[in-house]
Amino acid sequence: MPTQTPPALRIMSFGAGVQSITQALLIQDGTLERPDAAIFSDTGWEPQGVYDMLDRVEREIFQPLGIPLYRVNNGVIQDDVLNPNKMRGIPGFTASKPYEVEVVDRWGICPDETCGWRKLRAARADTGVMSLFTIETFDLGDMDGLFEFLHLIPLGAPLSEVDEIAAQWAPPSDLDEDDYEDDDCEDDYLAATRIAAAVRQAGLDRVPGPHDICDSTGLVATASHTEIRRDFGMLNRKCTQTYKLQPILEQVRLLLGGTVGEGKVCRYCEGKGERVAPWRAKRDETEIAECSVCEGTGTISRVGQPPAGVWAEQWIGFSTDEIGRVSNRGDTRYSRSRYPLLELNMSRQQCIDYLNTRGWGDVVKSACLGCPFKNNAEWRRLRDTDPEGWAATVAFDKAYRDAPGMNHQRFLHASCLPLDEAPIDVKQAREWKASTVTDQVYAARLALADEGDPDGCSPYACRSGSAAA
Image (cartoon, rainbow, N blue to C red; front, side, top):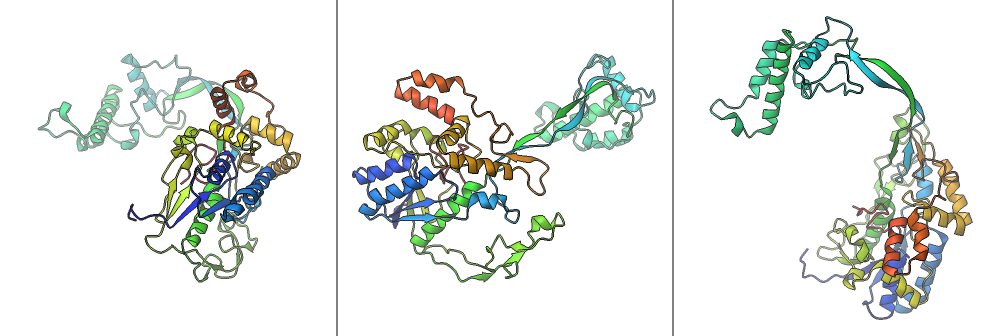
């Protein structure tokens, strides 16, 4: 697409948060030119205050200026996440059920005097490289690095075979070994020669074979204890792409002249509109449900590409403190990003001050009620200011706990405890110190540190802080 081609449309990505409302007011007062449209992508799980603010902006700013506001969606995220027949998810925290594990406190030498691995260790100990009996913790896969590349040498291989393997990676005979530049081959050569030398030093004629007593390590546990453990993790983030970007880009294509194609028979359910979800079939489950691809219609229709050379300027409300979230990865042939607040060099704090002067100071963050990227301050705010939203989120968290096919349990709070039991009242020092700070810049930095991404979930950058693809 030629860079000199002007945009066919200017479209504002509107999230109803601090930055996007600031942009709307800057349009109203003439600082920014009037865009052709605004798009709000609705996950179906926003705080009620976001929907109230959305209605107010449309009523008081967009409608008087003649700016159409398109509300788009790709389903209701909280319902989809709990639906076992849809492969939808949020980046929840995961924890395994408690399990018992044996932890070795002390290692000893293999009691089998004929064990080749024991002999190798004794030979290595004689060189002063390592001690056999004073090791309290030991990496079983290591032997002072000797067998880091043991996968190159078959267990039980005779020395002649080890020498042949080493010769395969030997530096050319007409080169000084110091000038040998193939690092991979050099590492393999040195590893094979070290293994051959160690085997000879131990008085063996071959690499030891498998040994059950010491698990082919030359060591056995002489003291151990058991511990109860849980494994923790976090699920992948897919919600931004599915529930924010995808419906926005579909609407952009429609506004630019793309058309909805003729419906094609859904190949996933063969036009029936229902099927056994393949991930459930793998678990031998047979429940027939609505096809998640065609949404039960039996056909699939896509919004086609706009005419060649036609593109839209997509306004994204990143402020100067969010410069790290700026990315062109979301740009397409028909859509290019623009950042009006960066052009005006406006920070989030400046946006807040501007909103206060215009009588728009009470702005709720645009982010799903149950977004796992909330921190304690945000969870407390939800609990203390929106009882209905809190109750619904607690109920979701409980329903979210177990999922078919998952060994781990899922949680909204980072502590991996139920939301209504999680330690959300634990405050960090920066929280209570903030009340004594009068400098606005410092206060903004304190808030950013305590509250994470301050403006909620942008379609072009998740609350995790990373840019969305």
